[in-house]
Figure (tube, one colour):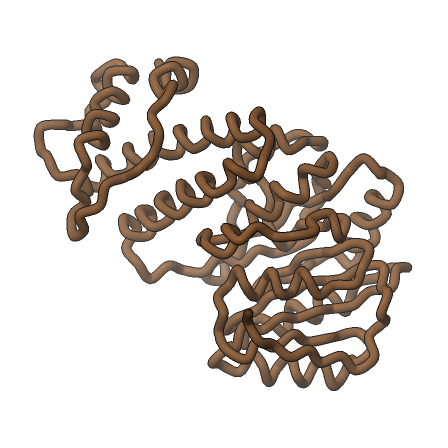
Length: 331
């Protein structure tokens, strides 16, 4: 069990809202994140809980100064050693007292001073909703970009979310204590956000607010685009796999179809970046019927594709993959 220390200088023991900020090596950004919460104009009481995963930079000193300045609003959860993103997040989520929780990453920030008021007002007045989220701006290298999240209706359910993630973490506000116990597998995935969104969404509908009320900071990846994409696809496939046992059969089936679709796009990625050995198969020409292309890709994967630089088989189930391809990938 990970060891951590809580610094609480007098925060309300029963706040209406808990703002949950996870942070690691965010010395350049964490102040802006906290300030964006302090600027909130809301009639509800709140606590700001900041969990630092033993950052080696100056993050801890920054948040300690904020806690000294605002002891009645800020409590700190300080890991004694680095435990990793997911364990730090679970520690944070299991030490919150609010009726509602609003998530914020330590390198993101909110832009609308009424964000909390709008989201919590909605949840207070709509008991059949478990959560709500909103649009964000994307900031990369000092430039704002369009968000590439898929567009969805104003009201969605777990059935929609099971098909694809469309929520940015720093926009997500939800009812606390819906998830009583976090599955152990959540600690094994590369990013626990989607897993958590899915668990919360078992208990009610999801509302999208169209306003842009936060900035999501996208950092430049030092890896090559090929290696970054390879890591992303492999992690995403793994993340979906661990979800299967935790949901009813109908939701699990949707997740499995999403799994197959992601594997299909992963295979396309491998071919396009030349990460599959075997010169005889040219996908880029796209002259073949899509079903034929898919069959060839599946054959390559089933033959235990050797990725350049590492010899690993890709493990997944191909049941119904051809039926799925006919519905989604044919011309």
